[in-house]
Structures are given as C-alpha cells and as structure tokens.
Image (cartoon, rainbow, N blue to C red; front, side, top):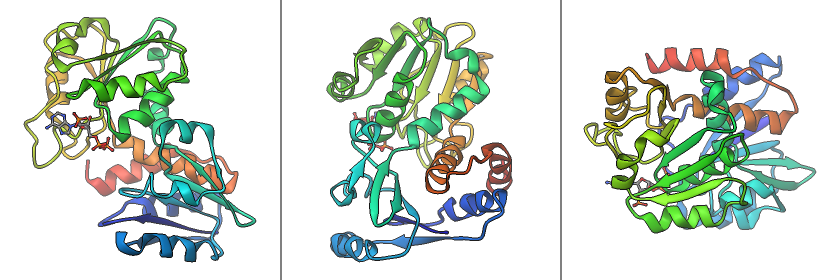
Length: 276
Ligand code: ATR
C-alpha cells in the first residue's frame, strides 16, 4: 500500500508517523511519502501522479481546493465544503473526500458525547476553511443550532447559506457572540487567533460562558491557548484540537484500506511525540 501527502511547504508533517502507526495496527506494510509540490508546476505534477501506482493521498495547504478539477468523483460532503483533503485511487479513478470536519467531530464526541443532543447549541468562531469543514460535519449531527461568529460576518453568512437547512442557524459578530454567550453549550475556535507567535490573542472573551459549556480550540500550538486558559480559569470543560489531525488521518486511512482503525493509541503516541 502506497500513500502520499501533497502540500507546500510541508515542513515537519506528522502524517507519515500517524499513517505508519495505522499500517502497524492492521499488520500491513506500506509507505506514506511527502511530496512538496511547488505552485508553479502544480498542474503538471498532478497529471504525472495520475499515472502512478498509489492507493491514495492526502492534500494539505494550499491545495485543498486546487486538487478538485483533477478528480473523477467528489463526495457530496466534500463538494458542499468546497475542499478535499483525501483522495482514494481505485483502478485509476480519483475520488475526493473531506475528513477534516468529521475527524474533529469524532474527537469532540469521544470526550463529550452529551453535547450531541437535540437541544444543543454550538457556537463556531471563524469562517475559513477549517470552519466550513467543522460546520458541515456538525450539521450532520444531533443538535438544535449552529451559530458562526466571524470578524467578517458576511463570510459566516455565506457558509450558513450553503448548508442543507436542518437546524437553527445564525451568523453574528464577535461582540454579539460575547453578549449572547450563555446560549451556547459548546464554543469552538477555528480562527488562527491564539496560535504561536500571537499567543495572547483570542476571538472572544468568555465572561458570559454558560455553566457546563465546553470550550474547544483547534489551535494546539501552544497546547493551552489564551481561550482555553480563560475557559479553565472559569472551571469550564475544555477540548484540545490536536486530536482532529489524528482522527482525520484515521478516516482517510479507512477510506483507502477499508480497515477500521483505533485513533486512541495513535493519539497517545502523537502526544508523546508532541511532548504534551
Ligand atoms: P483556515 O483554513 O485555517 O480556516 P483561513 O481560511 O485563512 O484559515 O481562515 C482564518 C480564520 O481566522 C477566518 O475566520 C479569519 O477571519 P476573517 O474571515 O475575518 O479574515 C480568522 N482570523 C484570522 N486572523 C484574524 C484576526 N487577526 N482577527 C480576527 N479573525 C482572524
């Protein structure tokens, strides 16, 4: 089984480590290569890969949208999200999926299954690519409402307008989110605020946090972001987004191989590697 990752720049990707552990779990040998594709020759390089003997690949920044014209089939959820992070290759046919949002939701559900109930209200901070994946995945789950809050409110409204209408949706500003915070059972940060080196920034403050609410941050460098620190100081339950990377990888691996794998031991190994 041969897999690879495309992106630019790739830096110190954790994906070969994660997929190596999944291969061990199913007792198979395989490879997971890093292919840093320079933007100038992206199209030619992708066409060349179409002739190769791989079983599948992952796509990271900045190619999650650019890969779409090269696919033979796109899963409806990935099409709705407008980005692909996983391609399955079978008999030369390339099928694109997006496992980022579903991976995030699996992690949140593992730690806080009680959040997924008919009355739950989710507040998602940010309206970029990560937000789109998470919002679409949440929309498939049991909950009452999904609100997106963003610096640029129109971007939040654009995501909401593209959702299959199943729930109560809203697009609001950060100040509206702060003022109405006690309505939400989970607050999920998908913005880059708080990420190194801007560790003292956060999208909103949590003065009106509801008792029992969960605060989650997909930023995991630093592991305890300013938002998570404020949540902890209020005694709130918190969720760290580093697990999203492992769960999205597990879902990709399952699509490629047809095997079910256990993300939990891989998360433990990942945390040891991150020295958490
Ligand atoms: P990703 O793919 O990681 O989601 P992105 O698509 O660039 O990255 O989205 C970044 C998100 O962080 C957006 O919601 C962005 O807000 P805008 O849509 O208003 O640009 C948010 N963000 C980034 N820097 C920000 C800042 N300094 N203040 C407020 N929001 C910020």
